[in-house]
Length: 419
Image 1 (cartoon, rainbow, N blue to C red):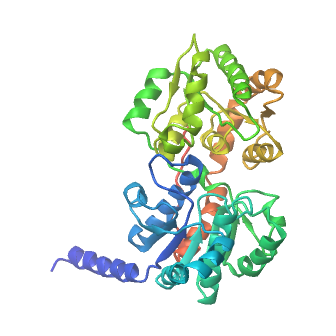
Image 2 (image 1 turned 30 degrees about the horizontal axis):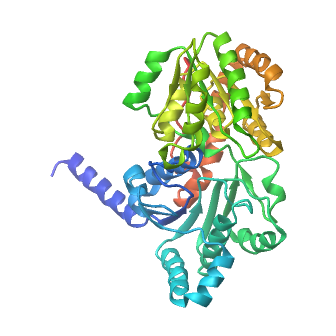
Image 3 (image 1 turned 120 degrees about the vertical axis):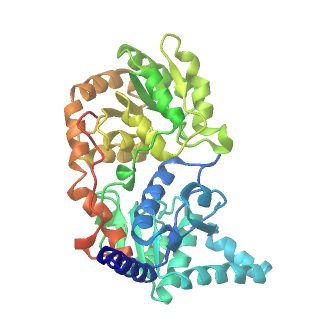
């Protein structure tokens, strides 16, 4: 047998042996896969986690638990199972009224934990009392994981805020995790009595992937601004129109078309898409294009990277812009959304160019002018995060795969000179 052939066979045996030793990883993520309930921000982070782990251990070694798993295999190429976000109180009622159903729910958690080597919570910062069902369901599974001494990792999360009861449970369970990865510099570390590791939001490293629709749309509408809006709880229709009028005027002043990027549209028609249809009549002199249906987050990131400007009320639309070097301005509604939008800039070392819906009439256009003047700063910040920050972001994935740091997958450059 020729020497090269022997070497290839030896390599195959080595890879096969390594494949046998790959850990089987249980992922928990509040996603649905591509469909009418798709939520861009949560899915963006999950998409990164799935791709990273898939490259390291193989997608056949991944299984994802979520409340609506039907579309996950088709969207991401991994297996999925139903992991319902049942609050503790509801589960207690189930024990009294339908004990067999209760036992089945507990047995499902035990079964999924036992068949995996490691557990990772990723995609969607839902370890908070704001979403009690999600939090309590995850804590129950993590308690079982701790019982069976499974390694637990959390990546790209926001930890807290918590009710007093939740805080006690969190402090009893989370400190046993191997890694608690958070995406904010200041807040999460105050919410749990265990060390946390800061890294940029995983969506910063989401790969850009145009589809035919967005590639054609981008070409047809150049130059354009990407706009994302959301009708937050305190906003009525009049407030939505008022904010949209200011945005339309500001974009028109810059001689840009508008591409409206929805992030969540329940049933495929509600939410951001319904909002876009309510405001599109305001664009009488310049193009207004609604991206409908919502494509994969990686596709929307590619579209965002082609734009000249982003104006967004949504956090992850800012992440898409800032991580690709596109000048951006955020519009917040309350203290919570202000903190999130400011944080997206601060995490990349940029001045927070944000205004509130109450100040938007006077605040938006000066911020847009400042953003466009600072284009070089945005590009520099996006390039900067491709080195040490990327490696820090990938560390928990290397640990999950059992990879020594020296043999970890090397970072690639996402931002090019012509961004």
